[in-house]
Length: 210
View 1: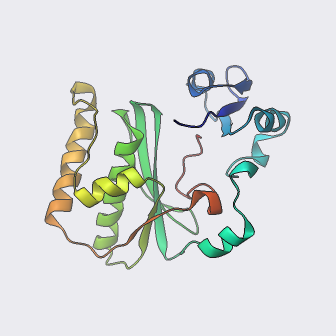
View 2: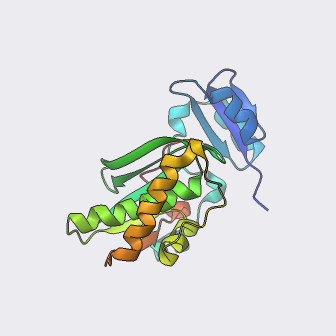
């Protein structure tokens, strides 16, 4: 069972603390530059709401922090890398993905928004796009992703989504077919690594919508 989260909206239709994502989403949809973030406890969310969005953007919650020993064991990210991530407004919903330089966050590629997709599909496509990008550049950089599901799909060379193809998502499924074909027809030496969110914070390619 997923852990309950509380959501703070600093800029939206109505600001405040919300107990579920759907209520939060209803306040931020269609609002340009909406400011919001999730927290693991109501107390943290309430405290954050009294503060400024800038003080919390990109920072992990204290309750998710690791011990100094654990942090030492994990070490620092390998900056000879790119990071990929996806964002979906709903499941399914409007989806997009991107790849960035891990150290500088410079955007290397970005696709979407697609009218109907899921976060897992976006994570899968982002990794494959990254693999093709690095192979084309003859680069030895590795790829960071925060999705174990997408990593397993890439390994199996199959996007194992339950989303049903229809006219609204035809362009997305065309892209999925191209990605699966690329995986079948190409070899690569790129290492795909799980981003350690608890140790390093949100992945650099994150869209900032959590």
